[in-house]
Length: 68
Image 1 (cartoon, one colour):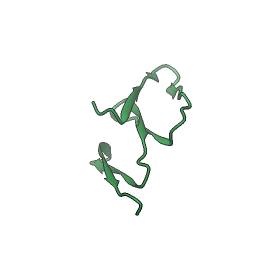
Image 2 (tube, rainbow, N blue to C red):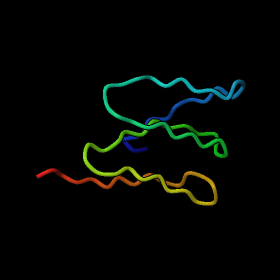
Image 3 (cartoon, one colour):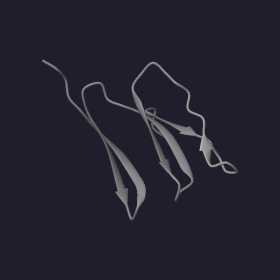
Image 4 (cartoon, rainbow, N blue to C red):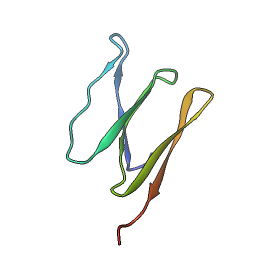
């Protein structure tokens, strides 16, 4: 598992998640088809792209750049 993502437990009975608030920007990805939820850190400069395959989250790409 990447150091940029953190698995979040889903409460199956209530279908809810609890998300801790950190100091860095992040997004929460929830894929109910796979029964997974992850907290994904965002890049400081660039793009974070979520790719899907057949309606399921397949991967996350990080396109980073640096300011001059």
